Amino acid sequence: MPMTDRTDRMILSVLQREGRITNLELAERVGLSPTATSERMRRLLREGFVTGFGARLDPHRLGFGLLVFVEVLLDKTTPDVFTRFAEAVNRAPEVLECHMVAGGFDYLVKTRVRDMAAYRRFLGDVLLALPGVRETRTYAVMEEVKSDGLLPL
Image 1 (cartoon, rainbow, N blue to C red):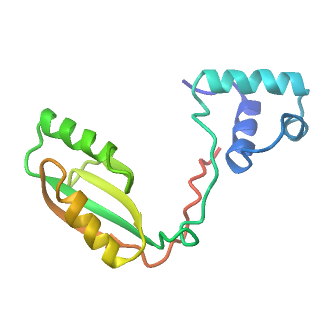
Image 2 (cartoon, helix red, strand yellow):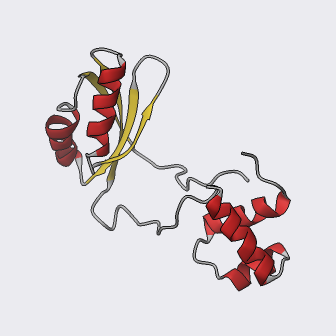
Image 3 (cartoon, one colour):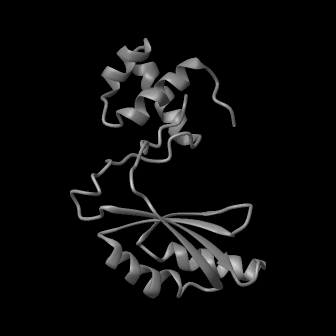
């Protein structure tokens, strides 16, 4: 569902950078009254344009310094294998993101761990134990060039 106008995009752009902004500050930034801004915010939430609010945490300060992407190839590509794999991934708190992809493998998994030894444990205890996993390829991140996750509104 497309956004209705430029003001909605301005509100969303500010919110994704400053989720804790007050309604009054947001209204001033986008040139609306606080009441009109509040009404638009409620509509954007109700219509699913805003899916939640949260804090961005520093993974290094919290002991999750190693970012790893893993290509996962399944032994079979059938609906039941996809379903079992997806259900198991959703129960694995170490998996930050998991995407079914088109191409030479089936899923791309993103995880953060303390170090390479912790990744080795994750690989053996969690990832390779997931249903249907035949093969993995690991890509340890040496430098995060851009990771803000902001949409180009």
